[in-house]
Image (cartoon, rainbow, N blue to C red; front, side):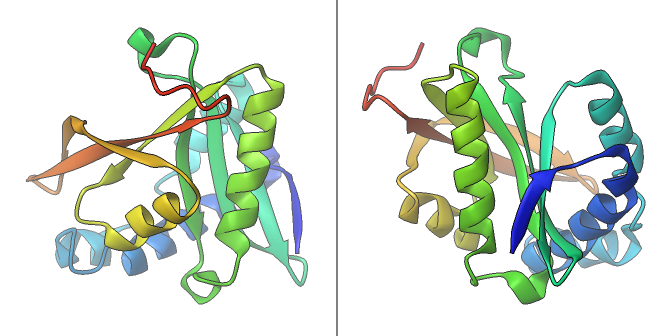
Length: 174
């Protein structure tokens, strides 16, 4: 198991991991027709832009010299949380779920965010994604169900809920 910063050469593999992870993790949550039609190159433009513009940091995790997961994080995109860091996403190939790879990616991202000077970190999780919610809660993230947002995927509305992590045991929102 190796973790390293993603490069522009990793973008196609990252997009493939995201697409395959979505098809597995969101089965029964997001409309199946959307998942069936989701292209493996869907995230290529986003990751190319993020990588070239240094908007987010992406790290990849490898098993047997193959990319099997990715985490993307950086400065909070929510302008009201100007001193916060954000984890935008963590995705793994399905066969690596539950084997500690996600924990390693999360630990690495949190370590970087702390080095960047952030004391408070947040992320959004689909309310119906019980597996992800359990993962974050097991890793000492606190669910703040008072903070929700609505997103739309394939014409259907979904609720995302906020999870927060504090390095300094502070519990107040900036």
